[in-house]
Image 1 (cartoon, rainbow, N blue to C red):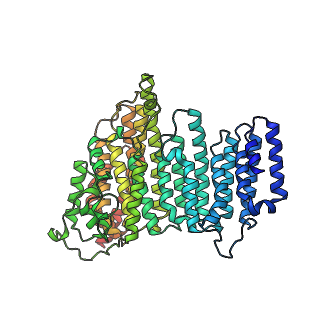
Image 2: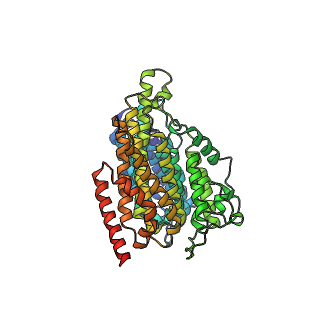
Image 3: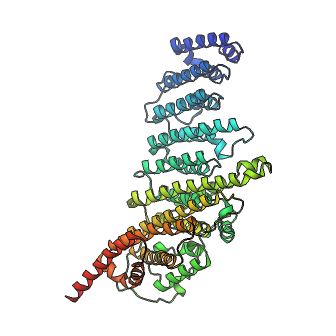
Length: 592
């Protein structure tokens, strides 16, 4: 009987399909106990055929609703006998053959051409999972996630079909709704689903790097929501995965058209899947993110015994050469001559490492590299060389979109580093600092040109403005995090020299800008204005130093303070007045 109804569900006559569905619906509602004994799967498959009907929307909507009803009956134990355990549904054949026809049927309906049916199927699927997910064991959840939920986002994970604009738009709308529902589901069953966190991060990486600005924005927003909603629940290993993912996103979000060629070459070598980091080849070794083997053996966070002059020299060389600080090969401690011996031995910062964490990092990096291996395509690249006049505008618009996504990612870094600071260990902070530093260097090297290759003259100023905003945002976040670390005894040694170096560099750059000719156009004026908030943060936070810290660094900062008294910016002069008042009070107390 159900086979006949299954065939009728695809009939062209609405009256026939409607009457046949009413019969099936009455059977399910009134005689479910007869159906459930032997014909539950056949009944579900019949309902799926009605739900997937593309001609008659109302019937499809009713089919989706009845599938939800069948799922509720199955969860109540009216189809099979349930054991009195916490998770009565196991990843066994007898349970999978009952649940998966419902899940896969709803998943098929999610590709329905009508948006109302598609949305109803998506919401019904996640509603069933959220309502009855407590009954599933770990193995069952893993099969549901990989076999039902992940395929919903295939258009993002493996690239959508660009041949049909309407199809692509419908797939994206489904993904946008699905991402929000997925975050709610993961947060609701965090303890049961936490083992799938790396898969979730990999999915969000695909969404954020997708060549659609709307999808990327929703992906970044949902990623931040997921992190902050569950910030108290993440384990150190999960926080490590989050920081590695953010570092990966901040690098790969910028298209290669804006990357300096030297950096592209060096980063490609470091991040090539064929070149496995040595830290992952041994046991008990730990590293932050695809650095060199020497850095892994002696991470800055776990090696406070590094000589002050040697560490500062290494950083200065790296800045001058345009090489990433985290990829410098430091001299091993055994061959290094100490330049100074601190009177008080700093507290050594602990690095957390286990074989399980090493395995997790390796698998996550492989997944992330696979996600970012898809080429960045613009609409004009897909259409070919036609309409060459609009290609530059399209390219500029895409680059601006990437900059907007980057701002969201920097906001996520700032929210994590400030709002979840107490939950982060030393490795996590090192990764976040490295990501912010790299973003600043990239934007600093890219924001000065007034024109960009392949970008129209109308879009170039907007792109420069966006890069300036990114440069200011990354520098400000970097400073806030270093200042906070410097306020802690345990982390002050690591932050001290990086902080002082960064502050002097930013202030000196601002002084040099003011000493030069006044900006001749809006772009140069914007570049000058973007430095003011950074200098203001530096001066304000220096005022918050303890008396000991203030006195220690005054010889370094005082010449810069003197130069800043000539600044044209009133807010800077007001803060300088407070600093000089504190200097005067300090001198007076010393004389007494």
